[in-house]
Length: 382
Image 1: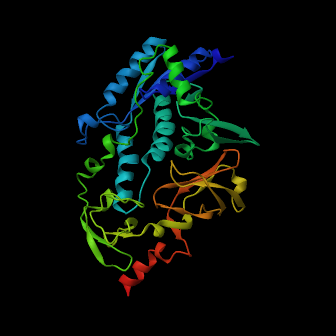
Image 2: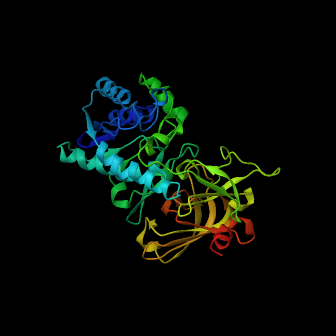
């Protein structure tokens, strides 16, 4: 019976996690609210841009969680993980950007903090529970002894990409009450419960306004040259952390009528390499830290779909992952803006997450000479 099972719900102050707690309580579970505190005021993030995952708006979110738990009559605990967040998410984020890569902090936060330290620290504090739940739009399914993530019913809200780092043993103790719901259904249900956050806007950014500059106050990213594939200097950039693969706006340069895009970031030379849009296409990618959900899939050629960023439509691909976690993904059709530092996530035809890993190298499209930044390297080295 559900009344014998205690579920801790990770609350963020938004409508999704709030409704998850309500639904679980209605089903008879013993419910506990948990929030991880990650903000300690160390960065000058603008107050008027505070509605984000990381920033000074955290106090308002915690207050909203307290009111929710009082309203529905469940215990509530705040776990201070600000040091862990700084060490595992912020430092990682800065290091990757300074190395000319494009990290996804949400993936690391979910794997290390929300589904890792939060659970561990709560239990160390004597907070006992059997299962953990969040308001993510995703589903799980157990097959042949392995628990898989499965894309949400509402594909426009599916968040499985951010959670691929959760292995089978962890997923077997996690539930996602909103996996079968649409966002509209969630808001309607929240209104029926009389939740004050029913129409609260979603937090869209990692930091307020998407402005990462405050996170690099002590790193002082150095300006450098913007160059073409032949090494010709076209302009100046303000620091590698402010550019990403595929970027077009904010370059401050123009040549002829063809728009220019960021094709690569060269951390050793502190250069932003630009070119025409056709140079953004890659036939595949390499990852050196790939993990498959089913151990039996290592060494097997997988025919599946690969997603290279959250808003990317999964592309047909063949994948081979060796026993050391090195993966080669070959796309059926070349894909645009494969960015080292982002993650590649594999999906089966019916939406199962087969595995994922951080992208280390993009394989240039052989039919497009302009897509290969190796031309730039050869020119500079020669």
